[in-house]
Image (cartoon, rainbow, N blue to C red; front, side):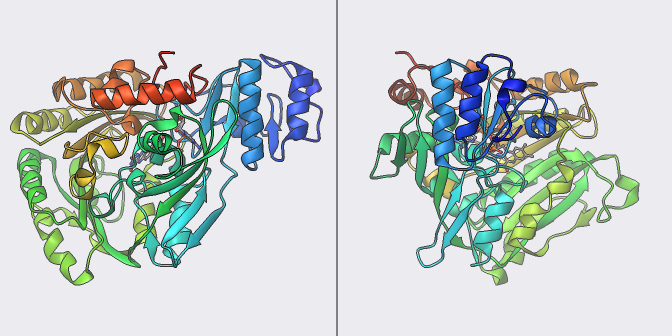
Amino acid sequence: MTTNQSPTQTASGPIGSATLAEFADGLRGTAVLPGDANYDQARSVWNGAHDRHPAVIARCAGVADVMRTVDLARSEGVPIAVRGGGHSIPGFSTLDDGILLDLSTMTGIQVHPDRRTVTAQAGCTWKDLDAETQQFGLAVTGGLVSSTGIAGFTTGGGVGWLMRKHGLACDNLIGADVVTADGQFVHASAHENPELFWGLRGGGGNFGVVTSFEYRLHGVGPTVLSGLVFYPAEEAEQVLAGYRAACADAPDELTTLVNLTTAPPVPFLPESVHGTPVIGVGGCWSGDPEAGEAATAPFRALGTVISDVFAANPYAGWQQALDPLWPRGIHNYFRSALLPALDNQALGVLAESFATLPGPLAEIHVQHLGGAVGRVPAQDTAYALREQEFIVNVIARTPDADGFEQAIDWARGVTAALGPDAGSYVNFTGDADPALVRASYPSETYQRLVQLKNRYDPTNLFRLNQNIVPTE
Ligand SMILES: Cc1cc2nc3c(=O)[nH]c(=O)nc-3n(C[C@H](O)[C@H](O)[C@H](O)COP(=O)(O)OP(=O)(O)OC[C@H]3O[C@@H](n4cnc5c(N)ncnc54)[C@H](O)[C@@H]3O)c2cc1C
C-alpha cells in the first residue's frame, strides 16, 4: 500500500490500525502492507532460503522516515529488521510479523573528487557506488558481487578485491550518520562519538541504523589486471600448496582467492569441463599496469592451466564479472573460518572437502587477507582478527530447499575440521549462533562491543544481526 491509502483496510498483526495509518501518512516514502500488490516483491530478499512476512515494510525516503520507523518499533515494542542491500545470508534483513526498515530506495551518492571522499546513502549497492566513484577514477574496497549492499558489508568489515592495498571497506570509513535505538540522529567519526565509530567498523548492525556512509577513496583503474585461471580438480593439493607459497610473496596491490568449485557452462571454459570440479584462482592487480603481469604470474602457473582469462578489465566491470553466477532467489548458507596460515592440515581439509562438494553450486573460497588489512592495529576497529591471513568461506547453495540441510551440514563439517580455534567473520556467517559471534572477535573486543551495546541499545532493539547481547 502507499501512503495515500488507508491502512485500516488491511492492517493486521502487532501494530494497531490507527497507529499504522498515522505512521504511513507521515512517511515521505511508502509503507507496504500485506495484501498490497507489491508486498511479495517488497518482502523478498536475495537469499531464497528466507521467506518471511513482515507486518509492515517501511520504504524509507530519508533520515526522517528512518527516525519515525525506529520510533514506531520502540514505542510499539515490535521487532525490527534493517535492510540495506538485502544480502544477509542468515536472513536478518527480513522477519515475520515485525517492522522491516527498508533503505533500498535511499541511494544518493556524492563524490568529492578533490577530497577523494564519497558520501553514500545506506541503500546503495556496490554497483551504485562503483559507478559514481569510477567516473572520477576512484574506488573503495567493495564486494565481489556488485548487488551486495554497502551497509551490511561495511558495518561487518568488508572483504574485497582492493583490500590488501587499501584495507577493508570499514577501514576506509571516515564518518557515518546513525539513527540510534532511542531515535536520536548522531554523526560518528574519529572526532564525534568515536566509540560508536569504532563499533560500526566490524560490529555489524548492533548500534543503530546507519543512514549514510562517508568513505576515503583511492585512485583505481580505469582498468585493473584481473581475472581467473582454472586448474584441474585432481591437482588440488598442488595448487593449494602453490597458492600458499605465492601468497607469501604477493605484493599488496594484488588480492587473490582460490575457488574450489564446479565449472559453470561459460564460454571461457572448454565444454569438456562444464559441470565437473575445477579450481579457479582469481585475482585483481590494482597497482602499476606495467608490473601486473609479473605480479600475477605465480598465481597463473600453479598447475595445468585449463583456461586463463586474466585481462585488463574496467574496474567496475570486474566488480560485476561474477554477478551472473550469484542469482537472487536460490538457497544460500555461508560458514567461515579465519586462519593465521594455511598449514598442511588445513590444506588437507580443503582438498578433502572439495572432493565432497554437495552439489554443483557449493563452493569453498580461500581469500588472502594480510597486506593493508593486517596492518590496522587490532584495537582501532571492531573488526579485530587482523593477524588472520586467510579467510575460508564455505558456501552451501542449492537451487531450492531440496538438499539444502545436507549442504549446510557439509559446510559446518568443513569449518569444524579446520579447527575449533578458527575465527569467524560476521558477514560470512549463515547462522545466528552466539558462539560464532564470540568467535568473530578477540575477547577484549567482544567485551568492548558489549559495553557499546549497553550504551547505545540496552534493550536490544536491533537484535536481528550477529547479535551483541547487552548486559544492562
Ligand atoms: C552474493 C554475495 C556476495 C558477497 N560477497 C561478499 C564479499 O565479497 N565480501 C564481504 O565481506 N562480504 C560479502 N558478502 C556478505 C555481505 O557482506 C553480507 O551479507 C552483508 O550483510 C550484506 O549487506 P547488505 O546491506 O546487502 O545486507 P542486508 O541484508 O540489507 O543487511 C544485513 C545486515 O546488516 C545490517 N545492516 C544493513 N543495513 C544497515 C544499516 N543501514 N545500518 C546498520 N546496519 C545495517 C543489519 O544487521 C542487517 O540485518 C556477500 C554476500 C552475498 C550474498
